[in-house]
Length: 114
Length: 112
Image (cartoon, rainbow over all chains, first blue to last red; front, top):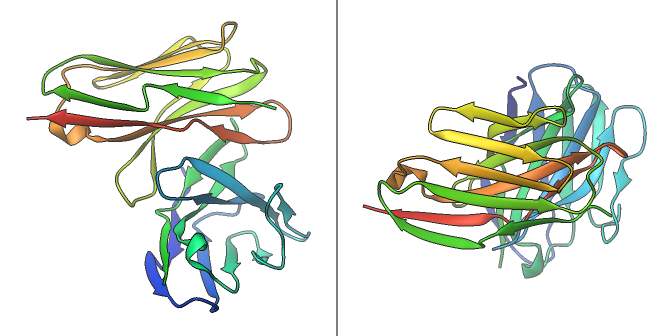
């Protein structure tokens, strides 16, 4: 199974600032995903990040607010821009194993916006 | 659009009880179903994965079943322990679109 390192594990940020979350995988993967989990809620997919192409965003999420980079097959970043308290959530990255459509998750980034 | 529902939303049981968590989904065209555990403020730990062709999977005190035709899965936890206290999430992988859809989770509390 893939091992995923996500940084930072948590952060407290001021309103109006931006935070970039990093996701590093120990093997090359084609598909990486970013999820958001708001307090008391389940996970919601933000976008799918494939290397060499623009990220595909789900309804309700836009590139200006959540720009994503995918420079190679082992790394991706998610930026939460111009943050407000409503952005306080856990953000998780995951990767898909080529066989079996299994996703593995990073430990998550717990973001609090004051 | 796939919808996944988990019942109950919260459950509190005394230590030692056997318990069942339920997951239902609306579109039976799934590739697989996963059960995850999430501790407060943490990421996800995969517990069990059931392929669409399988009916159940077991790991230790955990047993997950899948009835694809009726759109249901159950997670059975035997002899529950306080360390089992966490939120349990069920997620289905749809055949189309490489999409993983999560249920709302069941928050489990096992009291000593």
